[in-house]
Length: 357
Image (cartoon, rainbow, N blue to C red; front, top):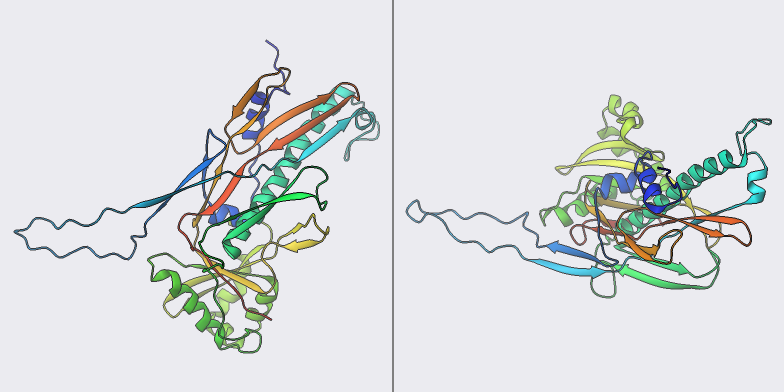
């Protein structure tokens, strides 16, 4: 029995066995993943119970009833992410990057090579989009998606905003007591104050993620350097290298007013389609404090026409490939589709701040 490598179910299996793309924010803070069989995603927010006390009870009583925790249910419809790569006859006539000058490759083998490379490239683009969505949740407690109908990066798009708070402004923003570059003694007191915001709710606050300019300020701060054991300071950028994707560096592990805080510098960047400029996922002058596993990613289903038919089918998964063929122009397109919804497990689980002016 022959296998059609362009059939969606076949490509889905190929996508599943691809090596995972490692990204710092997504892999460390949004660890829970779930797919849904519908376009809509149903999310339950459980009531916070981390700081409630159990009652003392007389031995003769047996037990005292306590309230069962409730939960809040919300429904979202994730926007579609769908980058596309086009393959033409002209592409198949010329050698690929890295291919020997006289490799002897025919069009069929070159086509399969293009397919594999395009799947990997589109998967990387979606992973970058998810990483930016993770950054927006951490920093802004919300994100806005520009849905294009034609040219990517054009001025014609429809905006869709998803926010995880009520009211006009984000409550998970801290105002620092002073500019960290001019009032160095305020740094530790601000970090302690940010940690306290959520630890008093029973939520962990263990990681401080900082932009590049904040990193420079911290590593030049004499008061902080005195708190760091010399050996720890020298080895800080070498700790757990196998766990940190490119752009992420552990620069300090501090005890701040009783809170153990691991400080990560994250300088990885993405290309903004609006202006073509490279920008950091964590802006240079910003910080965000949270804990590993604070968020989750849910994926809505994707509906498309089954390849070679006129029938529709709904696919559940985080990456759904589709092949489209234009016989008239001899053009084959690969579309990689995803409907990710990035969100916190508990509302306001990350606190952000702009600490440099």
